[in-house]
Length: 112
Image (cartoon, helix red, strand yellow):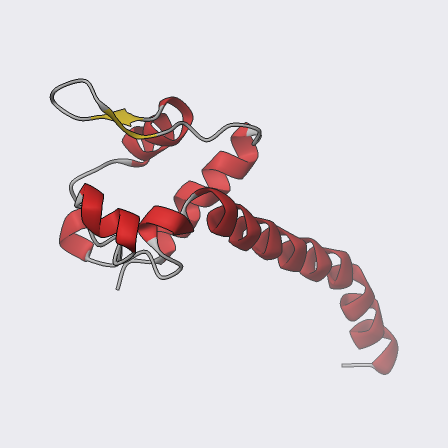
């Protein structure tokens, strides 16, 4: 490839690379702020609060197979209540639909 073509390709993809890096940083920051206290940074739920609530290990493929993306999005937007009606997960507030969808994608990326 000619040097000018390679340079043009690099320049054309640079904004996408920057956008993806910012996107990943936003998802990590949102996970850390809204989810990690209970679910843990790694998604295993082995935090003090996660253990108290019996949070399932989101890295487990069998656990992830038990819910759809739509159910995860609903849980994030509306919160979760147990069978007695007690709220066990608060809804995530202050995030856009795109940010919540990014968190859902992050949850799926935890699966081993």
